[in-house]
Length: 110
Image (cartoon, rainbow, N blue to C red; front, side, top):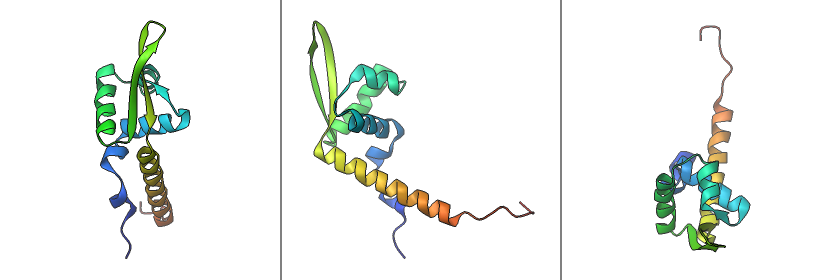
């Protein structure tokens, strides 16, 4: 018997907000903190905590700078971040496939 795909999910990546951060960063290549906060409907503090987790895991790179006189924070996925996102998506696809294959039509007594 093979290992269940749920066992391969990465706790750091799989958390809803962190998966969202990584997916958005993957799509945009470089994403601004305010855009992430608004898109994911988070407080600045909550987003900051999730970014810290991802940065410590070396899945994202955080760059601080200025746009005109306004301070800005930009987030990009690292090579490890891209790989971790790909792996997570692959495990999710396998999990969905197993669930769909196991579905049985409802019976009269259900």
